[in-house]
Amino acid sequence: MNNLKNELVTLTARYFPLSKSISVEKRNIILEFRIDISQNTFIEIYYNSFTGKKSYALINNCQRIFGYDNYKYWHVHPCSDPSEHIPCSEPSSEEVLCNMRDILTYTE
Image 1 (cartoon, rainbow, N blue to C red):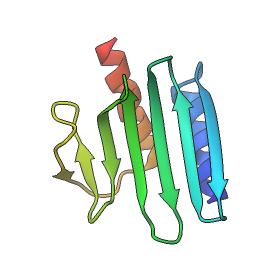
Image 2: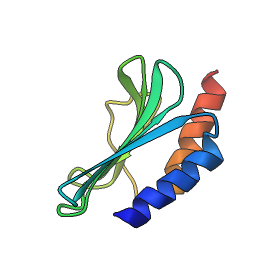
Image 3: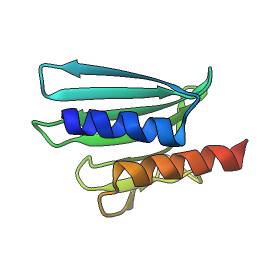
Image 4: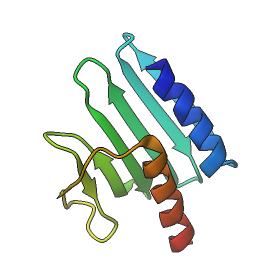
């Protein structure tokens, strides 16, 4: 879990250098990591080392606008329809954060 946290800190500095990140660890099995990008936009990352559940969500104005998670199977929630579930292979944290940075750059 510390490896993931350290990786996320490094990637946050690379892809979102002006952001603020917050991490919370619970019971030595859960990591909740948040990257505050602006007042209304942030990234939530959740990892449970016991169950293996992992999720990444790009939130804008209290709504997910893009994300990945492995609930039942790995899938992406595309920008075009974030409620959709498109099967995919497990992405790296770097791939996810790079995609999210590109989405934010494109929508600004």
